[in-house]
Length: 451
Image 1 (cartoon, one colour):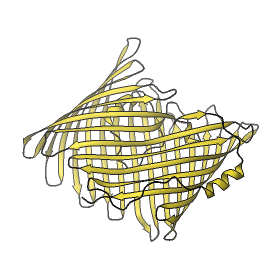
Image 2 (cartoon, rainbow, N blue to C red):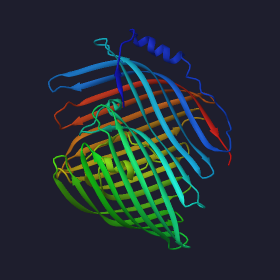
Image 3 (cartoon, one colour):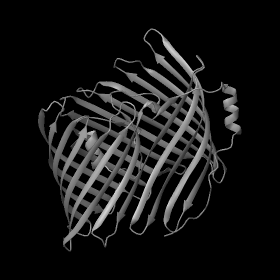
Image 4 (cartoon, rainbow, N blue to C red):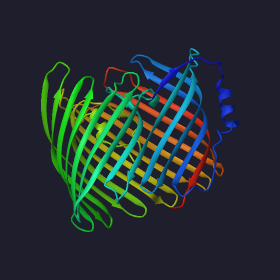
């Protein structure tokens, strides 16, 4: 996320609070229907004011800092479809100006995250292709920050095409190529990669399918060239209450460094995925073992479509990773509430440095529809890092968010948000606490089309 510093006229905390409550949200056109080409499109624009209080533990002393702020934010998301063409998008951003009450220094923070993906797929044609864009917050070193806008921003562009053949009534053979390139801000470096894939799939029954996937990826970052060859057998089954998938194979990586030296690495790869789905809830257990680096992921991973976007993406060298992810979403946890829970643990083994690290994250989100016009949301998230000893967390952050919204009109809402962040670290840096109280006035729109 990009941060820029600048100068502006002084303003008081009282004027900010009054201005927020009296200001009208940025107008956005509203409508009830849309052309048949659009499935759904929604968004909002908001004006907000907030107060941020930060405490930093210096060991023998504690520094405090209070900053009133004023800003605007917006979001847009939706799905547009026409024939064989489809576009899925989700973007959000904000621009905020704040003042340090201790020294009067003025600063501006801006952030944007999101992704979009265009695909062309016609069952009657042999050719398909896609284009994608992702803008995300990236950190390239160990450690978290209490203020998410202090991460760097990375834009990623991807494009690919595939050619399909049908050697039998039940079989499909597809050859494809996928390229990706990133453009980093500040300390980040541009990266690029290309992946060629061959996939032979065969329908085994009305609900099951088997496949053989082979791929070769080329990537370049900071003058280091990496080639990864992979092969994997997979089986997928659609069930009455969900789905099941399993796969196993191997990967081999050849790395050429800037000094001319080379290295070779091999690893067993695979995945296991079980999902349970009902009318009201969805539960998923996913295990994944893979070999990759941040540059290779640019072409291997297409933009997500779109359960949620991660807060930050960490850049890394060539690693073999084992990850286990549990998610549960219940739209009717009770008569007035919905619930979302997730937990993930990852083990990463660097093939370059030989280091072993553990990454953890977990969270819970509870939404309460208090009345027809009022809603309360409570969320908690935790992230932690450990080195070789999985039980010793060397860096962690807790985030707790509470928000109340009141609908003022069909597309207009007023809200109060209180966010807390607690950073605890065994590294050579200071613990921090941050508290943000924010008042938000939003104006939105929602468009729906009939197909």
